[in-house]
Image (cartoon, rainbow, N blue to C red; front, top):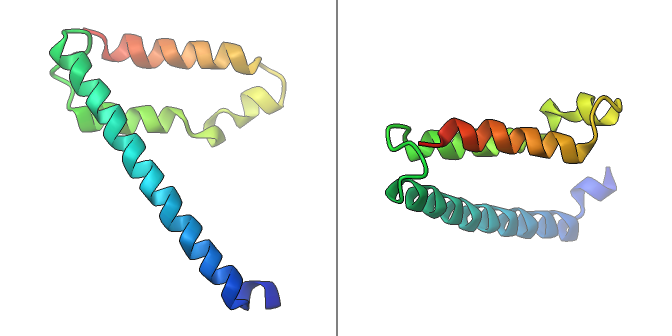
Amino acid sequence: LTLYTSLDIRKDLIEKKAQVHNCLERLTAQITSLLEEGKAAGEFDPAIPTEVMLTTFFSLLSPRGYKRLVVDGQMPLDDLVTYLERVYFKGISY
């Protein structure tokens, strides 16, 4: 309880949240740029809105959906990454 109400800790958490938000904004801008470049170069399907590509990309990175596969030992992490790359990049290829 004291930990949660400490002003120093709350201040640090607010600062960290802002840093993470800024980092995610930069990352989003960079990935959006790469997707747009890929569309312009004919590598990605221009009919798929970039926002859909971006949202799908970030969704594939969600660890919750894959926890069971990796934690339960059903699949090595490297294999999972390879399959996710294939699903995403083959799916948006043109």
